[in-house]
Length: 364
Picture: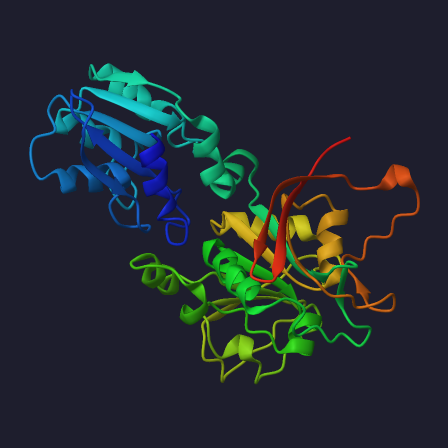
């Protein structure tokens, strides 16, 4: 199962909106005879790819799969039936599928066909691989990851808004991987106006091996701009490259010269300094977005935090000081100690000359 998890991780940048899944086929002696992983939606699932890689009879083999085999026909056929037809005698699964269309029925189909079923195994690792898919299926919301770059004194930009560059090239390359694993990148109009941000994937900075790099570039995240008053300039870099754009606007503006496909979304009071952010996330979940990356200024990032909509903070901290007049990490007005937002740090590591801190909000 640990090997199946390693295989599943290869699809971290390309399987959306599907979950990342790995499969290992083992003989009676415990030796791996074939393996596969799901690469992208519409193509073979991990089990089917492993069976195809086998190139022979699977009768009597054991299948280790990180996620319960599917039991419905979508863009591909049901993997549970494919395993039955191949003659697999036992299936070891990592976790049950949270998708209501599966939700135990794949395991039941296997048992009804006389296949031995065992699991869950390494369930925590399997769940950690697909936080967005699980949350979307269980709560109807995507996993929200807020990325911020800051100085050692917790500042994100000078008072003028100048922020390029606080962190170094290694940290910026690392952010490319956060973008690549996301279904959507959310930002506000002020960030785009100030930096002419494009929020694109760049092959040179992704630093991924093949085929992961090509798969990621072929399926870039949708870039979501909160622009209630339709202030986006027609010549913005956001509209010139990098894949699809979703404009969240009060009165939709038409951009005849846009070089990328774009669409509009109207939400009640949607705006870069607050608004109905939960409705935005529900709309993105309805569009099959699993993981959402918020790359915005302190105001919009603070609004997500204040609304209790942040699942994970990724902070890149540079060894520099910007001073007391620089902009804070988040605009989150708190006046009493009882109001503090507690975090659990789950990872801290050096990225080039900077530090990356990963943290999750925790309850009282």
